[in-house]
Length: 185
Image (cartoon, rainbow, N blue to C red; front, side):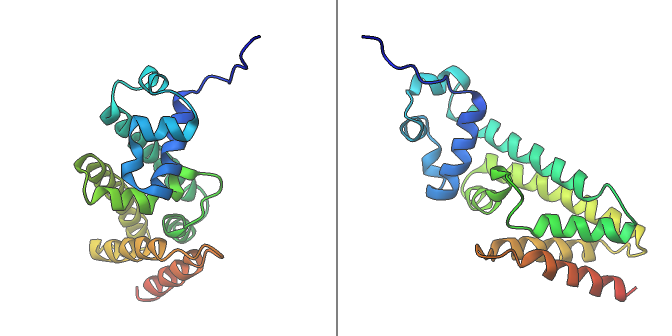
């Protein structure tokens, strides 16, 4: 009798499972054993792909940062400076970002960062990247005050944290704030 072979898990499978686990159960679920149970795999499979749990955490956060950068670039590609500013702010505030589980996990990552210095550093890098982009776009719209970028960013993150699972209300709300800021110039 031959055993049924399951497809081999990839590093990406482990990372997506980590985002799901983080969203559902918090950072305690990001260990080799809980993830292996979640995937019906062995811890050996986990260690085949990652040297240890801290390396896994680094890979998970690096994937999140990379996806944030892609989303940020996509939001600020086309249109006028005003359109790019609005699209960028709305992208940051959105609680539903297509099929990207890593971007939907941002609130959980921010919570994790409160107790984990590696996650806190990744969040700080994302915050700096986004703030720099917002400041540059605001400056292109003749609003050079860095504090306005900070206010806009804090509002976007706050709206993201207030997620409404039935409907994403953050995008229109942050768009209204962009319009208000632009009206003040």
